[in-house]
Image (cartoon, rainbow, N blue to C red; front, top):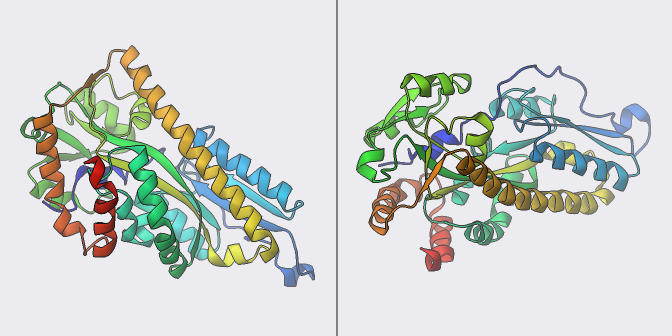
Length: 345
C-alpha cells in the first residue's frame, strides 16, 4: 500500500468544468505608474468553487470588507467556477502575474508543497474537532513553508469529509475493493492505487453520471456536498458512515502581490480574511449535514460499518503511513498529528 489511497484521486477532482480562459491583464497599478506611494491595488483571485456557492459568496464578502477597510484602495476581483482553468493553471497564472491569488483544494496546495497532506492523513482525524486541533498546531509551520514558496496564507476553507458511496450496503474492505472507482486523468498515483488491488476507470467529470448508469464505474469516493451537487447518489445510493479523510482548502496570495498592498493595511486585511475562513468552515459543516439529510430524504441509505469493518479500513489506511511519513510529510509533523489525535482513535 502506498500514498495512493483514494483521497489522492478525489483531491484532483474538479468542482466544475473550465468554461472561459481568463485574459491576461495587469495585476495592479504600481506606485511608480501613478506617482504615489499608495496607489489603488487590484487583486484577481480565482477558484474552482461554483459561482453562487457558499465559498464564492464568502470570498465576495471578504473582498467587499477589504475594500471598505482600505478606504477603496484594495479591490479583490473573484473569478469562480473554473473560468481561470484548473488549479494547476491558477498557480501558473499567479506565477506569471495574470492572477494574484487563488482559493485551492488540497490538490492545488500540494503542487506548492506536499507537506499539506499533514492535514489529510487518512483515519488519523475522524471529526471536525480533530481537524481543528491539528490545523491550529500545523498552521504556523505550513505558513512558513508557503512563505518560502512565495505565498501568503489568507485563510483555510473546508470542502467536507470524503466517504465511500457504493451500489450496495457491504462496506467491508474485501467487497469495496471489488468496485470500480472513478479515477481522474491527472491522478499521478493511479498505478500505486491499482497496486493496492483496487480497480479504477478514467472518467472525465462530465462523464461520471453516464459512466455510473452504464456500469463503467460503480463506486465513488467524495464528499456529500459534491455528491449532492452532481446528482450521482441515485446510482450509488449507499453512503458508508466512515468519514476517513478531510478535504481541505486554503486561500493564498502571491507574496509580491501581498506586498503591493500598503503594509499598514496588512494586519486588518489578514484579520478579515481569517474571519472569512472561520465562517466558511462553519458554513461547510452545516451544509455537509444538510446534504446528507437531503440525500437520505431522496432514498440514499447511510450504512453504519461494524467495529470489525472499521478496523479493516484502519489497518488498510495505516499500511500507507510508512510511505507518507517522511517521503510526503515530515516525520516530526506526522508523529505530532498522531499524538494530537490519539485520544479519538
